[in-house]
Image (cartoon, rainbow, N blue to C red; front, side, top):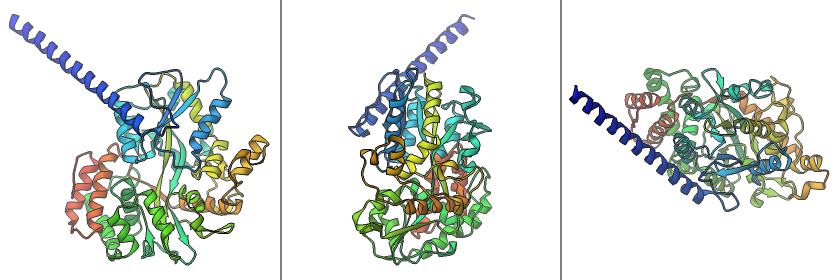
Length: 470
């Protein structure tokens, strides 16, 4: 008995030692994260605090909207917040979606209360909710989403997990086709991609998105989307041949093969399109429109030298959502901030002024449930909206680079693409899936000779969270 008691005591000591080591490790991770964020955050932003404070902290990726419209909305909250509401600040952790995921995940695993609101890629919801890192909105307020009918259903659904809502859409993303004056815009899915096509094919989430669109539009339309788990036979017999068919279109020396070999990401693909000829095509997100419109090389007097349309066939439905951290000490105020940032007026501002596509019907002048491009109402320009809000001409801002007619054209393209958009696979192991799938897709697209069964086995394992490669 004495030996057993001593063994138990030593076992308890060992367990406490492991706990102390684990706690020290987590603290070290949190400290390292704070250092990384302090380095990556632009000088105009405050660094992440090393302790919880009275202000609300919103953490997310770099604001790529024109004029930092996300930050402008946060400042608007601060200027209009009631005395009972805390001030808020925006912390940018990284321009890369993959690094955003890693850094937010590491921070949440420490249980830090330094973050109150997370700006998340919609694909992360399942994992973060499963691990208890997010607070279900109805636990904070049963009426948190009283106006849920005004959100596009497919976009709102990306913030749900096991029947409960954990995140609210901040902006949606769909693939759009930007075309120069003399470009031959593909009319059928089989015509896309073509020789003049530039895309985001670097080794990051952009390649995952484009490869899924390639697969869906070349024979695997209902595979690797949503909650339905594909079989290995579908992966081998439909997805692999679809990617192989696209690989045959990537002839050496053409822009598509160039963007693959050079590993273009968002900005590089914009630059390639801008530098290209009159037959150039670009697959990109809605926010690229405002950046292109402000480039003098793509302007002819007061008009633009490019257009935008919904791509033929299916495109990936994505976007960023706002969620309340389970470790936040200000959960009710965090929810109130989310409701402000995702309200109709805020959504209209980020679209007209920043280029982010809104997630509400009302932001496009559409009644709930009416998803028709032709029903989109005329979209006011940024200066028109600011004049309405402040009563001052242009509110001291820059002249509009796009007209109301052009913004309405963009809105109709977004709605048209949304009618054919599909979500990426909904899985608690999305990060593992994405890394494996894009690695395998890259090998196929570059002609590396990946076998069907090897491809199917690797992707199937990745969907279960197992590290795999082709």
